[in-house]
Length: 494
Image (cartoon, rainbow, N blue to C red; front, side):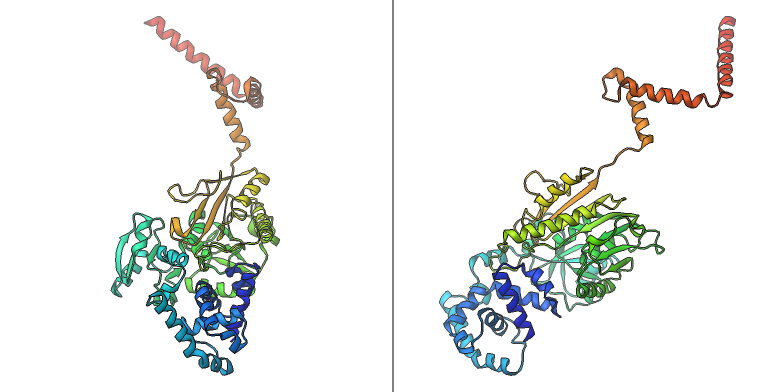
């Protein structure tokens, strides 16, 4: 019964605009997060259908249940795998099962449909028709794309080759699958394909991860042997992706092998540890710590050059809502989230050797995306935006077209946002001298540079340096004089 009461509690909070589904589910600390998340999402999807059934049978009056608790229990009874409770609660549901099933049957007859899915409102059906395929990331730490394809083909799956455009992914059905058009290690299956009980998943050879969620690690592309921070790491899919890109090798191999992963939630960190173990990740170091309290100047992080930051957000891009799009968000809550995200991004830029940071959210709101990045760039002029993935079809809003967005309509993924900030290189003193000397050679051509005064400073320094070795100057002069005399003598002989 704990599952139903917790699911109803989350639905109540969503209606009161106290948070997004994903955030509330993870914050609930429920033992089976996956089961809870699925129940909440599916109940929301069928919300209008469930309400009509409940009202037509006077189920609330008979049972004295609150509406959202009634919805989750009726959903599992009629659309799920049966009620998962016992005792008096199960007896109550069994008592009303016939009437509830009859009400569902009458709805189908009235609307002239045979499937439960056909009862969904048009908006949900359209989203379902567009569909988000099942994306499977091949874990390159344990296998190869070719081996996974061969294994699946032996099981009766039909490999259709690599997609040439996003639209190719809309027509998958049955056991057909394709290689993704953008990410080589990603395989794409029909939306209903489930791999949770498959050997490849249980053995850590494949990771079930939405394509948009794969973008941050893919675009950050840390080098093999680098030091990397995953700032808000749990549940760990992006961390395992980073490890695969790094080939499980941190700085100086195993002496200082570090993929630092931080998260505040102990339970999520524990789940993440299990996931990373299954994926064969060994180059990581987990820490139950607030990223904002990590000291960038600590010697432990002196070699960190890449940071992946995917902070808490509204989760408005997650596709499991009744209208097939996003939740309405309270403006005050969005502003609070954006302020937190900006603090995290500012903090990430404080690591002294940092070269690049990828900032991502599963939000569709500009408040959490473009506005956060713009504010950060204003405060940190030493960094610039990197133009990401030019062939990607959906770009950042406004002037920030260097960033990426993802959506069900344009990219067949969950809603997502990705930006990369890169430190602008500043020439060292040696480089400055080189540039100045080059400019002096181009002065007559009108090239902008430091001017005559800067050139003279360089020449004066060179003369000063040469005066410190007086023994060499006479030798150079004598040598040049002898060469001139030899040339003159040869001309006279000719």
